[in-house]
Image 1: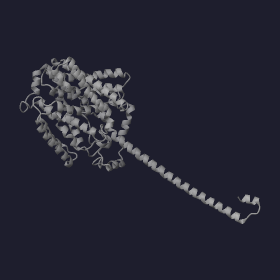
Image 2 (image 1 turned 180 degrees about the vertical axis):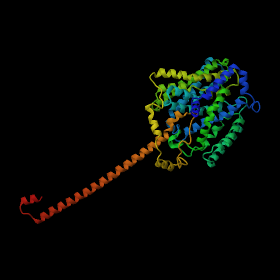
Image 3 (image 1 turned 45 degrees about the horizontal axis):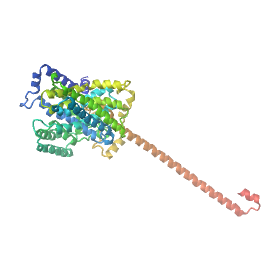
Image 4 (image 1 turned 60 degrees about the vertical axis):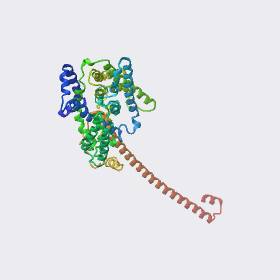
Length: 518
């Protein structure tokens, strides 16, 4: 019962929402005590709760984002091969460029040049909140959700680049020489990946991650991005449970360092987001200004138009939407993607110094959660007869059947022969559970069946090959019988010719006897 309750809290991002609500209430009732708590010195004046969450804890959040990106780029992932991801990638480009265009248009018309630095806030999509809204609007089995989550993962990757390049520490100039520490950390992580245990991530985090963090901190770049540089070097192969993979045939769940890191971080990040919401969402209501409207509208309208237009263009150049997805669903998914929240708040902290302008911009990010209202409204308007698709619908029972495909010894041998995994001697059953704070269990279900689907195809191919072999063998036997029959016929013909020749040699005298002989 307790475990189920905890799972529900994580599934619906309750800790993050609770932290935001608490911050808004506290900051508007007693702003002095609120700011005293989040800025109370822990070691000295700079090291306080706000610093601890934004510069240390958010390393784990962006680390999980990095894990999702690595999984997506690996063999069998959502972005590999690249041709199957062209449509969501184009949609992501629209989801980044559209809001930026809308922001600068609105800021030029009704805003101020002093607000221009808020453009980066409009490019973000909060994966957890977007999943929650999509689940409520579409149902947990609708295929558009995977499209949306893939879009959000790539959006996260772009967001990391935007934060690193365009939002350095505003109070201190960048000191690039310290980035040599990051390079050292990456080289060390690469070497560790060659010699370290395949299921132990601690050396990568404690040694390489710390060196990378120090490099970015001293360079006056966001140290929250430190783990993103290390994640690609952490081993991601090991013992597997093939038909329960959340990441495709080549990235099955198992006892690899990367999957253990993901598993161990998820609960910590899910509940730690309470503190991020608490320190990041403390905005006084009087901070609301036209900047709030500009940021919110740029997120909602810009994402919707950008994603919809670029997806439409992708279909015109020959790219296909996922089965069961139509353009009406893409419009609603674009609205859902407008929920910027987490990363938008993080960018807002860097875009402006603490004060009314930062508060107004962050309030716009908070208001983007209104995407849930617009998504419901447009879903009803565009598809009035549409229903939520859940795991209980008969239409989707195929997935449950595929998930239970057994993994045969022959399939394991095929994977071993092709060196897909380092170790397939011990398939594990339920030893590693997976729950994503970034991509949720229910929405991983389709991706989780990729390995099983491949296994089923291998089994079907093996059965077809066996049947073909039997057919070839039967045809060979039939050909052999036919050859024997032809040989017997030829021998009979030769015997008949010999009999005729013998009769002619006997020399019958009358024509009738000659005819009878013939």
